[in-house]
Image 1 (cartoon, rainbow, N blue to C red):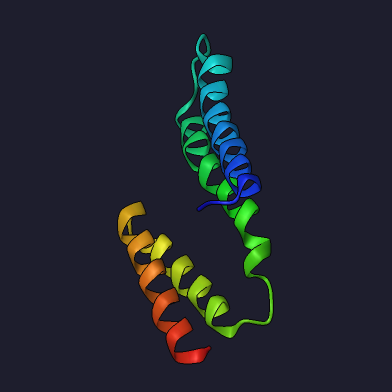
Image 2 (cartoon, rainbow, N blue to C red):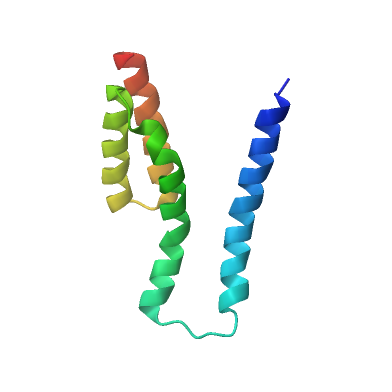
Length: 99
């Protein structure tokens, strides 16, 4: 069974993620954005996600550090779905081999 504190944390994280997505549309609905501004708005959710999870990975675990590098390389070459698959597979394999 899931711990109540964990469940509440998940609910708050989900609500925060949803609100950040919706607020962008609400605040910018009557504005015309340039192409550059649209590109920036598309990468903001990924930047927020990285800023939330990055501190967890900045530690003494070499498997996670190598997986981050592999993920960054994949993200610079592929779209989101292949990048997620590559990052999950690399993290799993490296953790199995190095931990």
